[in-house]
Amino acid sequence: MTITPVTIAFAVLAIFTLGGGLGVVSSRNMVHAALYLVLALFGVAGLYVLLEAPFLAAIQVLVYMGAIAVLITITIMVTRRIMGITESVNRQWPLAAGIAALVAVTLGFVVLGLFNGLLPVADVPPDNIEQLGAAFVSHQAYLLPFEVASVLLLAAMIGAIVVARD
Image (cartoon, rainbow, N blue to C red):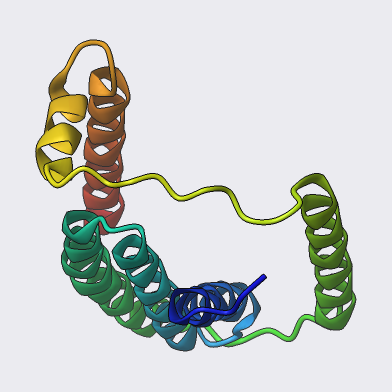
């Protein structure tokens, strides 16, 4: 296997994504966890760029890294101040990290054993944004999952408003 700049960029972005995800679940400080989440979302946006989907990368940066991460950070800061939460120490964290690392290594060996190399790269059509939009609104493709996701987000927003009012 030859190492190309795309392979190096993929490895760096995968490290950002996985490292950010690991930081989210292992950080004791919620603000730091939110910042690790931004790092993981940045890695995902970079992976979208590598997949030649610039529209999805831009949406990832604007919606998730911009709006959602700021909303999560502000929510954490406001609720911690109101509730007066103190940090608790979890003494089983090293054991859980070891088990998670063992599972990750095992899955890595299984995946590398099943797939002998990378899959061939298909050409990306130049009008992928139009195809993505058509797939979201066509009855045959993703209309129902798209609407279910929007209803779930609406329910989450209503639930957040109800919790905030109490």
